[in-house]
Length: 128
Image 1 (cartoon, rainbow, N blue to C red):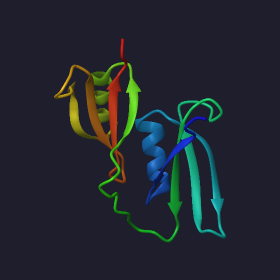
Image 2 (image 1 turned 135 degrees about the horizontal axis):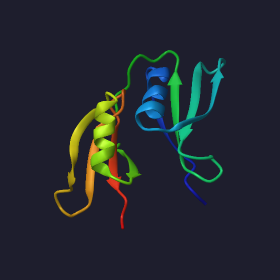
Image 3 (image 1 turned 120 degrees about the vertical axis):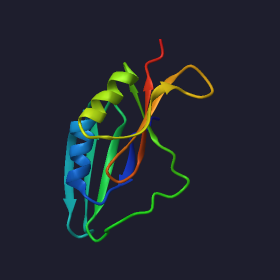
């Protein structure tokens, strides 16, 4: 068994695709509209779905807003250099919630950013 994807419901699919591809460097792997269900699915990631866990963005055509809820925490992405990645995201117009630095209970370097729908994404430095 393996994790296939994480699904997020998004309000503006194109805006979210642009964030995940241009700001976070993912690739749009596939996208399909389901007119009978009035929704579109887009799958993005850092590699082929057969070998990598990906992100599924679901756009329900009739929905203007979502409440994220208090059970969802965040998506975590591993990066080579948290400081450089955070700076790059900031330069590209991404929203930084927590600047890069050591976590408060350890030495791991992290930062937090936010996608266009308010979902938090943690950047974690590569463990060496």
